[in-house]
Length: 418
Image (cartoon, rainbow, N blue to C red; front, side):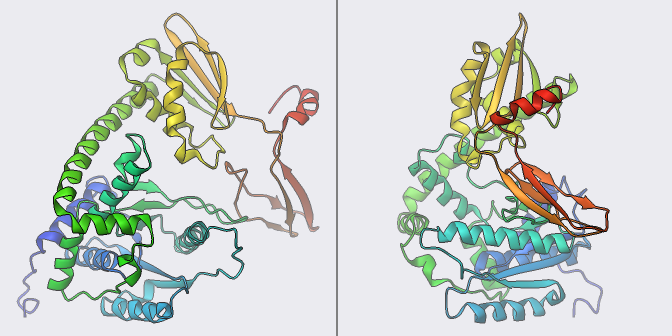
């Protein structure tokens, strides 16, 4: 065999592209993490992703401990069999010791609840919990080029703005756990297959005898995405036209992102951005506002404001920020994204300060801390992480409540401090 003669088999051209992709995603290979998880549904995309990562990990001696995570939604009779199938395939790769499977529970689903949203929250809560337990901060998903093209078309139908038309990003942060007392955990979503087409993955799977689960519902036009997928497959000429337009969108938005990074670095290097727990302060030279488009300034602010805004619809509110940019040079105060915007205009500068808006409807949470113990980290008011420690031998009870307009007299007693 090749191994007997010490010959190292050459990587398949798709494996070489995949290796280049992950090296690029992890700062040209300098910071490839020791542990990476894969969201493994058993479909073609995630099975190919698992095989590709396993192959390059072994071939290049990257030293990655690969964890695979599968979830049983329990909606189809064959779902438990599919989990068993995934487990058997993972055994063949020698990855079974780090295979995690979990069954989602929809027993308390109410008729008025959106199943898709409840399932999404449960999936992310499960992913956070497993990754937290094993100190994993990077999760790979099998999204590929065809997925992104479908997302592009769907967002065209939804009248998305230019930045939304970029579709799925190669790197992003997973949504935070949304149930009380979930552990605080930053989870990076990594998508190394976005330059790979579905047909390329299909060919690779066939050539390498990779088995996968076929979800028959993907072929049914029961969702908008399935309808778009069916249309693109039946109209290859239209698909080529859309690919060309999508690539032009990517080229334009990449240029915008590059300019945003340049402006941000200039502000940071000149110490014109001040981050604090109370709020964010940015001092713009008017030259920056004059020389950059509203789109560049809007993207910059949208990124900077994210940690401060408690708005549950933040990701869908970019157009509101874009419409507001012309007001930066004239208005003095307004509210947007549940944030107070305060502006001070000088001859050569515009100083913008944002703080969280006080709300007449407070968030509150009762907390019990056992003796000589502490709570888990938990997200409060969709913006603050808290953990409370009880060093005493008695049980402690607390009420955590956000400050409101009604608390103004109490604030005055302590000198107006936040």
